[in-house]
Amino acid sequence: MSEMNGLVDSATVAQVVQCLDRGTTGQYPWSLTTVLDLTAILIRESSMALAPGLGPPKGVALDGQDLLIDLMLSSGLLRSTRQFDQSTRDVAIKRSKRWIARTENSDKVRAEVDRLLADKRDFQPWIDWSSEKAWLSHSRRLGGLFDPNYLPSIAKLVGISEQNASELHRRSTEPEAIKRLVKQRDRDFDIMVRAYVASTIIRGRYHEEVARESGLQITRHPLRGIISGTRTGRASLAPRRRGASRVCYFTARPTRAA
Image (cartoon, rainbow, N blue to C red; front, side, top):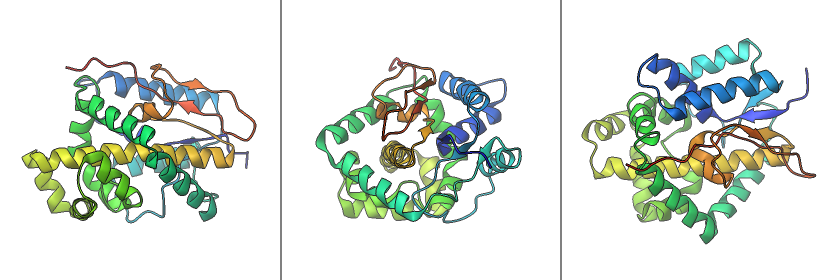
């Protein structure tokens, strides 16, 4: 088996599913750019694998994302991530917690969440589709809509107490509660969206730490563009540094807040 070269984050795979589900109508820049960039990278780079989660899957969703992943694995486009040991994941969790705990980073993530929520061109269609068609599967697969490993940081980013954040996470594990949130679109839904987006960004940092620890490159969904510090709009391959990973960034084009 050839040496693994890099990782593909699950958010990118989910974006492909969304693009396919939308068909020829309702496409938007994030959707098309991500699919085109991932295609180019899979052609250019061999032996790409799925970025690992923070822990074993909590359940099986059997949704479009799982079906696409199975197809990509069976066709050899992607490899699984079973070769990542727990020590690598533990180091990545520790470093990503340290990263988001820094005031300068938490301030940047908070500002980025605010910017995304005001973005009607890319983020709005993304979250509309995700909440309606992916949240239930996401919750079943990961045991909630955001990661309890980062609960203190997420609580601060969202502006609620840790106790309220814990209760919010509990609700995000319940299918009926998720359905009510999506239907009502009330203040609780807005808070859940903030927690969901903040967690997605932080988890991107976790993926980067796994890649760095393993000497790999990594793709990144546009939602996580802040982690690279730039938004070029195209996939680019950063040069390998000694002791660091080569990082292939999927970053978003500058958006106009509506």
